Length: 139
Image 1 (cartoon, rainbow, N blue to C red):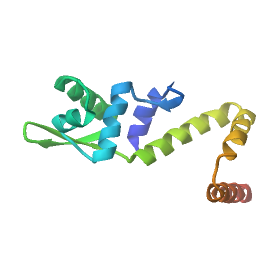
Image 2 (image 1 turned 90 degrees about the vertical axis):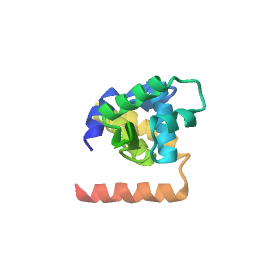
Image 3 (image 1 turned 90 degrees about the horizontal axis):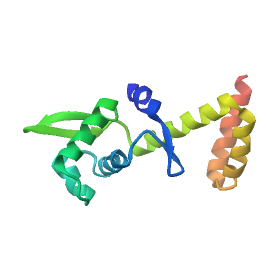
Image 4 (image 1 turned 60 degrees about the vertical axis):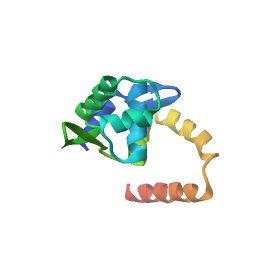
């Protein structure tokens, strides 16, 4: 998971969410997570917006260099694939944010969780309870 070390270094808060992506990078990743893989042409078409082919190609190359995509030669160009699923990516982002919160000021993180817990399902609450019990018994 070397990509996390590279990509998550650039973690920023935008639009009330943490992300290492710029606006167009995020749109491209959403397309790739939805379709699984694609060429520059396929991704440009799926974006349904007026982005130049070279702009999409540059964004894909940048995401590849950051470690979020892998690519395979296909004809004169490349086919791009996400390195991880959207769910795993979101999980890693959440872990990083929570880890940073708890490292700096655990009481602030606990206060933030109080508001979040209210919105969890019974199933999620049981998972959280089980995790807390397991961690409590370890130490």
